[in-house]
Image 1 (cartoon, rainbow, N blue to C red):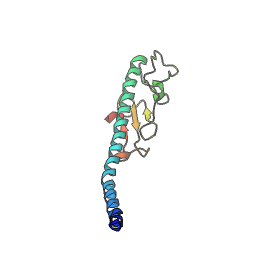
Image 2: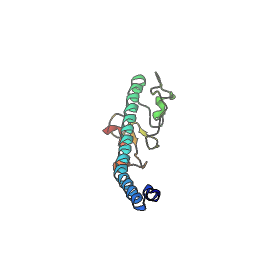
Image 3: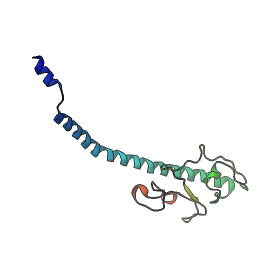
Image 4: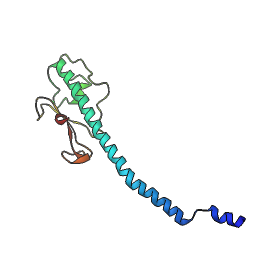
Length: 142
């Protein structure tokens, strides 16, 4: 009887292969969906940051009469630029962060899309244009 229990106590190679195959199939089906969710979260975060910059820029303009120049950039929301009369900042609580992919936001004023400044996240690839996760996230289509 002791010999019979020892033979049944182990796991066979086939049983291990079945378990490994099930885990691999699960990973192949679930991981891409989870990665897609992470990408979507980064896009949502970039939109939220651009909206926060736009709100702060509106307050800046109310106080100073104009938006910061391209040269002054978003840094003008945290530190008073030279010749900025009636600056009442800082207009943002935290330092200017890079976009969710680690790239600096692009700021232009005057912008090419109306009277407001252009604020752009260049997406995951950090270059203009692109599709999907690499697409630019822009203030004028927010």
